[in-house]
Length: 123
Image 1 (cartoon, rainbow, N blue to C red):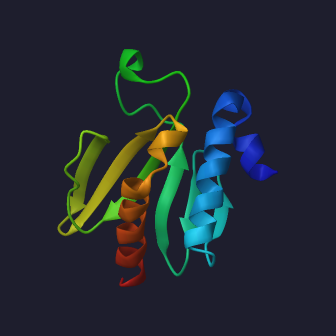
Image 2 (cartoon, rainbow, N blue to C red; image 1 turned 90 degrees about the vertical axis):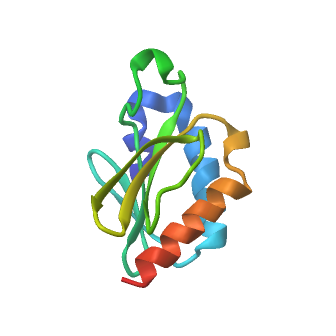
């Protein structure tokens, strides 16, 4: 219920998020979900992914329906799907990905999530 309330101002994005979470929990069933004011965080031993509604591109470049997936990565991802990537400290890349369609919930995205999950577990 908390997750649904997080999307209260963006109800049209909730079905996309729900499909994402269902697939995520299939692959990482031990995941704990923490709903906060500005993001939904995904943990096992450590945080490995977050979903938010922040705008990571110019408003004109953002789709009408979306959520932003943020991953902590050991290296920069090279893809036109990446909205922003920063290296807050050596060897850790914060990567923001705009997800706006069901088709984007694809093996490539979940491979990146797996990399972030494994990186977080090895802290």
